[in-house]
Length: 217
Image (cartoon, rainbow, N blue to C red; front, side, top):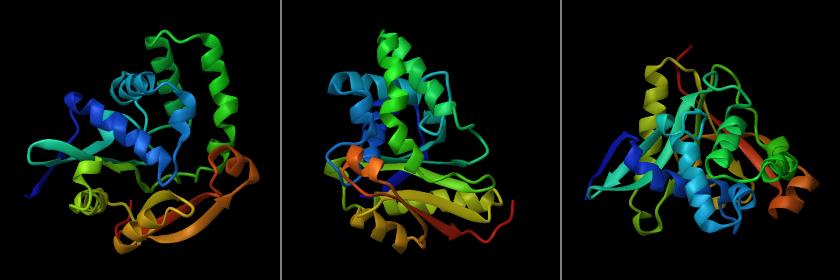
């Protein structure tokens, strides 16, 4: 059964919410979105709002690519120009989701300090770089090569746009993801680990991986 790749649509928001959650967790039991939205139903609604709301960030539907398997949206990732979004775009999208869900201002105010160790450790996204993030596959569709196809498609898009370098970030010790990205040609160029991140996430930190695309923006 062959996969069909396409841009994300509004009807994909449940999948995109799942992918955001999966990508945040990586190989861990919990990720940043589990802290932001502890209740599973609230988390699904909140992430769908972040992916589909008016405020655009690198978690928005507009930068997602989806792999259909047998007509079912089964995997997705985002690929975008690092200069597209400012550093506060995701925060604005998150607070807009809080407001849409009717969550209290106290909850909203607590998010920044809660996620500070995570955000401080997350790799920079240099300008003039083609960024790939938020990669995930539904459990029942794994081991079908969907991520490899999505990565190949995303990298080719970066080349078409003239970028010289692509980047992706991975949690340290997430060996399956590291192997998948190394197989695609990425190599580790930076490691960020802090005690504060380890206490929050139960993982050392992140690695930043890059791949030369051969273009020049």
